[in-house]
Image (cartoon, rainbow, N blue to C red; front, side, top):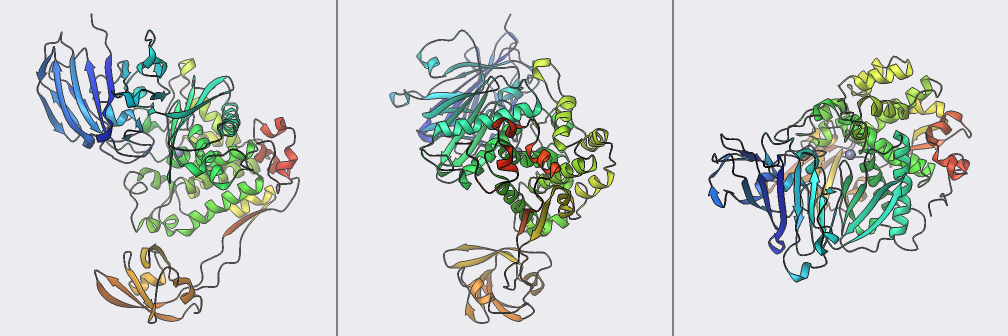
Length: 623
Ligand SMILES: [Zn+2]
């Protein structure tokens, strides 16, 4: 009897043409005609991407003979019925030229792919175990290519290709198969252990990364987060799969790995002093994706427990899964001693500025933003700042506000840390204990927070999550001895626009809702020419405006559809200054417990005061 499993084989067949050859063989087929589909989206990135558009050739065969294959919608094919004793194989060529963490990319230097871009899903066979054969491209020039993936190797395969990582791997089902991105090529590889769990970092692309420094910092981040949720770690091993490029930034979480894209200058170099901003941002990205190993990969919104890969899956909870993760990514760096309290307060202030800058925060709640991620947040246009609030940025401020509310309301007895651990215990998918995980419903976070704290949080959630009122952060920070205020802003009057520059040309990228520019009829896309008859360029805008007063009427000339138009704009008040957080009261016990967190890593480092109360010096423990 044939084993009930799906066997895949993938080879970079023509790297110079960016083509993979992918075979999918099914032993037991639907007698009415087996259907195969590619996902329309990849979990973790909420946009319909229609990966099937990159399938450039496809055919089927059984017992060595061709089988007719009909395309029945944008991403589904149906094979003609075959003898049920015959295996059916579909062979396709997939074009891969998307240098992002969400798709597939192939050339003569490397191959990267997510399974959602290349592996056909036999409909009805999603729960079958999968075997996948990773094959190297043919030819001498690829002789030294290796494989990096967190897929589990299938036993019993040996040889030199195997030593480089090629050969058979297995996955319990289709979901698991596509949750393990694969890199092939020449990459730097380093390994480390976090709480006894083997971890690896593979970096492809040209770089001069100080791997010792990177693994030392990642060890602390990973160990902190494993202990935060409680040992044992849910994954048997973990892989950070990094692609270093000239300029780029992105990350995508998976159950035992993350795909990361960064600028090569973001990586640490030998002899580097301290934690420069670019490296801090990269560590924040690693911390973010790693935190997702729990929050969204194993604690999931109810809508994601059985994903429909063919269309949008709606949840109102991305503010918790992305926002809370964004809150904890940098808080982890602080609690690990990688950044100082000053650094961290600066990062929060920058997030407050980011949310505060756009009028969208007054039009959309974070729950609505989560639900509409597919069509709004992930498909930004010129009007997005006016209509959309980021469930990442505002979601992380909601996390901050909730943490402060829980701590202050219970005199430090309850916290967001405790809530996260309770979510993990009640809703988490604990593979080792065969606990499948119970999806988080729309109201579950509020109910659990109320249960743990004994507080009535109905109005907090109504306003912060489902409403658009400003978060009362200054008031909430006060009991923690931290003052939030605005610095003095510039005195230059404003048009109320966001511009984009290209050479000497200055275009309107966004005209803010209710702004002087909008009242005068200026629009996104207008090419600015002059103010009061004087030429406008990216370098003269500020100079021309700063000599005028708010309330002054100016004439702005602009091209729209190549027609010169004149607009009378009454200049608005200067934009407000940036936010700043400052510690006003030393030795505040509530703050100390909050910043130190549990487990108290800083205590283990032996000198918590250095970071918590004298926050001007960079910690030495991270070097
Ligand atoms: Zn995320």
